[in-house]
Image (cartoon, rainbow, N blue to C red; front, side):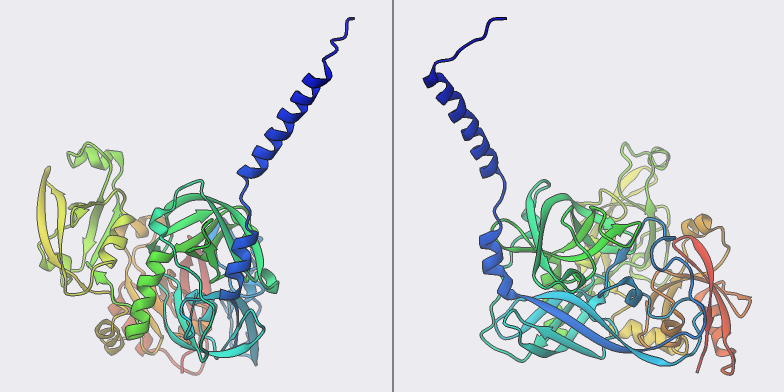
Amino acid sequence: MKRLILPSTLWLYVVALLMMGQAANAQGLPDFTELVEEAAPGVVNISTSRTVQRSSMPGFEGFGGQDIPEIFRHFFGEGFGDRFPTPPGGGQGRSEERQSLGSGFIISDDGYVMTNAHVVQDADEILVRLNDRRELSAELIGSDPQTDVALLKIDATDLPTLTLGDSDALKVGEWVAAIGSPFGFDYSVTAGIVSAINRTLPRDAYVPFIQTDVAINPGNSGGPLFNLDGEVVGINSQIFTRSGGFMGVSFAIPINVAMDVADQLREDGRVNRGWLGVIIQPVSQDLAESFGMDDAIGALIADLDPEGPAARGGLQAGDVILEVNGEKVERSSTLPRLIGRGLPGSEVELTVMRDGEEIVESVELGSWPNAEEQTAQTSSNNQARLGVMVAEVSETMREQLNITGGVEVRQVEPGSAAAEAGIRRGDVIVSIDHRSVSSSDELVKIVEELPTDRAIPLRLFREGRSLFVALRLE
């Protein structure tokens, strides 16, 4: 066999080409060192403490994650135990103090800090530890569970702040990085790419989440997500997991959404968002055809509050909402986000498909039930004794769960009997003390008649599963 002998100059040329290729590949990978050096001082560690009633009864199997199906779960503190303060079936027991860790970042040099609402939920004390190791007590200015955003204030000045970017400009495939305290390891840096944008997650219809493959774990909650320019484009909030740990899919709240919420919290301490008063469902291809539509788009009104804004504005069950103020409703999950951006009392133009024709209806938005007047209304005929705000269950959900009645929990008052029993937002209550709950009025009637000298069995559906919890009223 003949061997080809190249001239030495040609060998040098080949080696040079290989080295250039390697250099080009190296240059194609981002370098986060400068970003971290500049941004780290504006990232903080958040620790909370709260006193909880420890259950004296055995817990429900699966809360460690091993028996829980693929669900979206917030991550809170050093472990998932703090995410479930009282197991279903929990009774009365001794009190204990629990501490949890999260992350946050400084948005103004006079001490305003952003984090997740679930990081500081029910906290008795909030401590913010700065990059220079100072620990300062924080005041909770306000939180918004609907978007999972909270605003804190610490007593300090001339603080290092982070530069905020434009989350609307993010593109799929773009490099991003996170700084936080996973498992308590301060100022840990992880990086990845944007996997998708405008993700809608179960029961989080007001947030068009940024999906990434950045490694996010318990303790990263509330920490910033950066683009390559060192600008904050999101707040790390949730992971998708089977095991309870990071599995390559994480979600961040777009900073544009978060800052709109933060501005309202700073001004009023709460968030006002528009409310339409409808129950919607997706439009399938078969439904689209039956309505005379070419494409399966929009949000189908399955039911509506007869006293709500939509009914007063002339909308009907069976209408398909196609546009809100000229902005297309591509999916049913898009509608709550578009409506929620409007202020109560403002007017929106809705393009709807009715009887095969497109018409335009003007509707004056109402206040979402977490506004003061809705809360007062709920408390007056309430559930104040139970500590929940509920809504009727849609026919679609009833069919999915194979139930005839039930009410869906929209809010749980911290420290209430419902919270102590482990009831959560999104649960569907179907019976109390072996009495069926067919409506919110029925729930009020049953709760008013319940005794206070014993634990009461309450049956509910959570994530499609039926389970009982023990309820004890005062």
